[in-house]
Image (cartoon, rainbow, N blue to C red):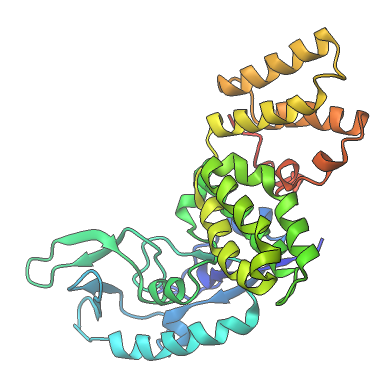
Length: 315
């Protein structure tokens, strides 16, 4: 498997670029995701010309357009940072990134919940976004992004990684995929879409079905933003159970009474959050191979990310 290019705050890889000369090495990012991701490290502070170590900074003023100020000497670094930000954001286009992991609460790289202080009262609001993170997300609105702190949540972690791999598969189609490649992509992702949203599953089905009428290029322009929006929605236990039951429907005429009962019990145990998703998935894969169900064999839903990441092993 080829490695997928993902942007990341450099300190999370162990680079000593923080204001105090230290790093914030994240072992999950480096050791667990590292074999699958080819990281493009970025440190806004260092790359815009600030030293290591350096005085600590914070955001102040308006939440939507805050100033970047040093805490003690009160130097305004906003213009210096933004000049670099606008250049760097454009440069990153050539990297063909499939995702980005930001540094939580950073005044430059925090994706959300960054403190923005009232300069008069000193009271912070926690609704800010880092200057680089804001510009990056505005420039690449479809790209999967996440704060490293939020990756500690199993559901958020799985959703982010699933979107990164989906984005990569889309990139693999090339800049101008054929009608056949596009329709194959949609078909292979049907059950994955169903696990996130029945509404988007139907909507994207209608968009794909009209490709002959509207043309491949126009269809793709309409399809992909909606596809990524669908995957950003949570794949809840209820939605997953619906997909599992849908898959089971393909085997009803092949399974014995005992096999049907066993499969129903396993799906019910997952629905009641007694076993992880990997348990019913594994049993369904067995029947898919046994009965050679070609349509299901090609469904990304069954393998949306590497098995080694164990993302479906949590309850």
